[in-house]
Length: 51
Image (cartoon, rainbow, N blue to C red; front, side, top):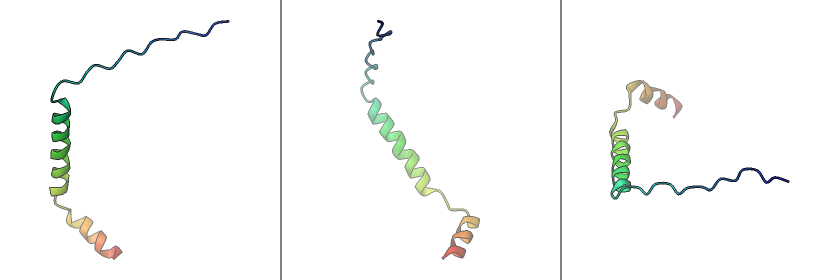
């Protein structure tokens, strides 16, 4: 009776020092750009019709 091929999982590579910091910084910048975007007038018009 065969149990099949069981492969050992290899650990993922260790992130570079500062890698998480760079990723966090990039995410914060992307979020801030999104928050700072101007809402198009068409969208504001549609929202005003809902309220």
